[in-house]
Every structure is written in structure tokens, then in C-alpha cells.
Image 1: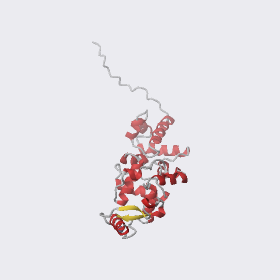
Image 2: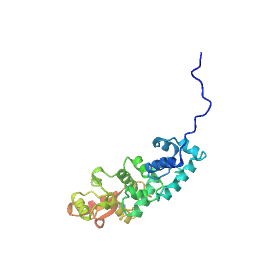
Image 3: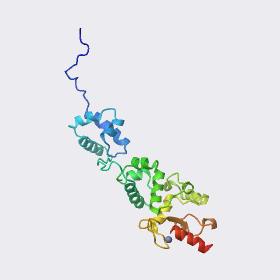
Image 4: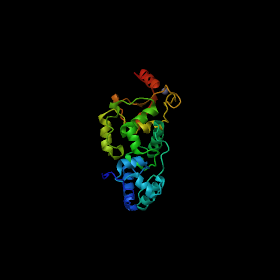
Length: 246
Ligand SMILES: [Zn+2]
């Protein structure tokens, strides 16, 4: 009886794939990852060709493929960060450090594009994924720096990037609610060196310390949400203050 399951020992003609096709696929994946380094299995999730094909083309080296991609994109004036992320699991502290660096450099809450163009140690997607959203990441960061939880109603007006809102709109927003935006909060905290302006305590050196951004002229008495009317107080001094005045 004839065996139907003969193995063809001659290899099928090698699929001819051009370097251009490979680079196109690499570029597509790079774009997906905000032009940050990606691994083989990240590539395989998205590309139409297998990473093994790419590796084979570049003599079995993935880093060579990444390097060629970097050069290819450079020629197209596209910035690609081909540096391998050394830590697979970025710690929250690392993210907060980067957040602080970039936020203080910009002077406002970073947008997606500002984050990407600030040569961050971790990608926008990493931060977004870790905190389940960008605003949430910014909020957790301010909470980390102050040791104080921010309630939902305190940041209700946080939609839209503050930089893109006109002065009029910002003023209107301030009229509407006593909530202080993350942006203004950070400016006040940074101006006051993340310390209580009365006793000088800081969550960085005192784990018990919780900082609040406090209205100097109370909101209920017409005080607004501008930096001039805001100060950093620890919980204790904040309570003491209201006892003294009222
Ligand atoms: Zn204090």
C-alpha cells in the first residue's frame, strides 16, 4: 500500500522576503508601541510575519533587527527608542520618579505627547496600563507625594488638558467648583517644597504626615483656586488652623 504520509525532505523554496517588507513590519510594530523598544513576543502579537523570520534575516539577532529599524526610522526622521528596558516590571516608585521629573520640567501635568517626547524611562502605555488611565496615574502620583487620598469630587473637572484650556475657561472652571486641579495642586506643592508651610513636615521624611492643599481665604468666603490663594498644610496644622480662626 502506498504511504500517503511521505515526508518531503527537500525544503520548500525559501519564502523570499525583502528587507523592505521586514522593515515595514518592524515600523508598524514600533508605531504601535509609541516608538519604544519592543520584544519578539510583542512583535508577534501584532506583525503579519513571524519574529523568527526577522531574526533569521538579521543573522539570528533581535537586537540587530532593532538596531536596523532605528537607523531606518532615523532616515525617515522618526525618533525611535531602541534601548531595551532593563526592568520588565516597572515599579510604581520608578514611575512616580519619572512623573515628578517630567511634570516639574514642564511645569504642568504632562500630556501623552509631552510624556513621549521627554525621553521617559517607561512608555506612556506602561504608565497608562499600570494605573488604568492617565489622569489616574497623575492623581496617584500627587497622592503619593502628599500621602493623602484625593477624592473623586476633588478632581471632577480634570478632563481636558489644562494647557489647552483658555484662561476664560479655566476661570469658569474655578468658579464652578472648589476642586483644585492636579495641575494647580502640583504647582502649589512644588512651590512649597512638598512641606507644610507652618511646621515644615513632609511625607518624604515623616510617614505620618499628610499634606493638603489649603485655601488661604476659604472657598466659602469667596477665596478662589489660584496658586496665590493656596498653600500646603499638613493635616494637623490644617485642623489647628480652622480651630484658631473659627
Ligand atoms: Zn504642619
